[in-house]
Image (cartoon, rainbow, N blue to C red; front, side, top):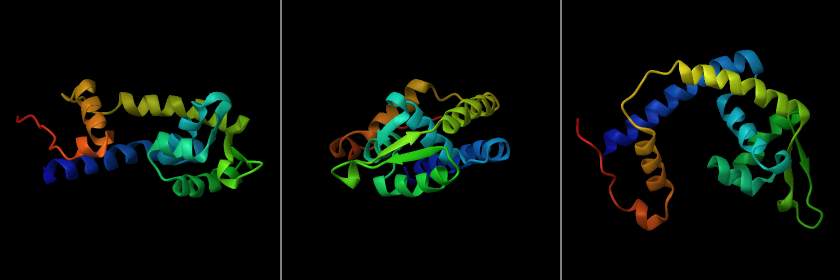
Length: 148
């Protein structure tokens, strides 16, 4: 089981590097920044509370706040403060952010098309994802791994 987990982490790192290079070269953002902006773009009007955005990308709200700071400085995101509570502030995708996401989507599609083929089905990956993201009781069960 340890080997599977570490292999998945290594694979995720390698895939992220494949996205980082062309995104940084063409649009000046990392894959993690793109994922954050892409997730934000999928909320109504490109606006979300940081807690909601954190849930969407699997980060803590404080990690999202830290990640948004440089994107705000370069004009891809703005912050709307909550009237009654600072924790209710909204992250808002700007017009420049929308353009970046649109341009970066094409780059991401090109990278995906260039990834090696695999025999792992999308259904198997979805099942693994559900198992990892499920309630704590479901995470306590060992994952079934097909033997090749």
